[in-house]
Length: 303
Length: 286
Image: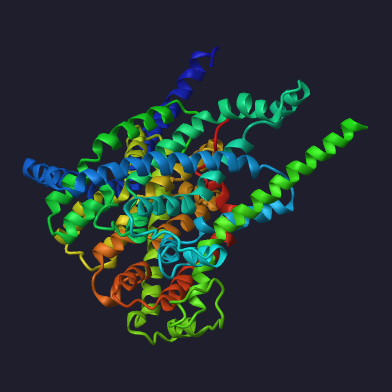
């Protein structure tokens, strides 16, 4: 309304006023609706996240439980196991997933069919798979040692009766279960890279390795880092693999902090000690979360 | 000529390597699953043998599970029903709470929306098992121990953040002009939510519904801690009890585990195309 007669202005004024009041009314009602819509999630968040966190911090605030925890001979082993689990299982799994995602980029019906089979461990629930692996690794009657026997007529190692083999078995089970998931993530990441980049590089005479080194890696690095951090956070809280593969044994030697916390709280009936065990993982968890949030804020990768 | 031959030989080498790798992947993937089937097809006594392939395969153990005619399996179908009930309720609540929150964040002029997304992000970054101890204590205070509602609450708590991410991302592809047009025609926020937002979100709803259902179907730790009476257990807790009992007939355990694993796998493969967008952690920006 750049040019106006005074008459037109006067005629429009009440309409405009009515419109702004209506807009204000509407905005305030929208605000109420927004509050109403947000309420269920806010309630869930306060009742089942904030409250447990505060209660947990309070439970784990007694220095005496930490003294008891650090005096426990099982605890140092659990810390070492947790670190090994995070460093070896997570990184090995993600590196394999990165390589395999390249393999699954190949075309053809066979590759599609293979992917459907390959996804099975992830599509199936974790507990049956872990129970099967537990029995499969039985030193006396398990499938693996039966196969070793029928092939070489020698006894296989007692997989779950030695602490190193048992920890290795837990890592194996973790990789078996989660490799398909991360492979699919990287596959999606690779598919998002424009094909023209590879075509142009191929025209310029770049080998497959050079294409991987100079196109795939730089473009997928952000995703790879986010996946590493996220996977490490999830592995830190992983309870099922240790519980069902080794059960923390032999002689409590393969506990990780997540399972030891539950054991201390419920099997030993000492919630404060259990909470102290869990909270002692915060020096690992907080840097992972901080790095992850920084990476996500950069906005290259969305969850 | 020799160049062409070398190229052909090269391709043959690549194809051979691909075939070897394929074979390795199949063996790697199927060995634990084969072991499950193998043991389930054996008789109780044959489990303790050195066989690789069951000599006299039988469906006896499946029949035993089916009829619940072993004491550790006495309530197997009840456990399946409990798992299913919890899964359905978790999926419905996650969809309701998640869509409402995502709608508020993405579609309403609500200044505090960022707080909701940050709350979701924060929840997403807490390892679930780390809250198990205080959660157990709090459920005691709420009077919800040995109550499926406690398990439902925790599953919904940990499923909604992811639901909110996916809904927000998916909702961003629905043009805001639709909302604006409806607003000008005098539609209220609930009308926009039900008539415009939800119908257009259908694919994301299917993906997240399936995700929440599978998440709670697979839950072991919280169900194990929060449910105690025989009639309320879910299948994974029942399987865990089975594993820890002194004389565990492995063939029954494996048969029960297979029956428990089948429904989520059927759902997963049925919805695979719809979930590939959702469950693979959303899109990856180039």
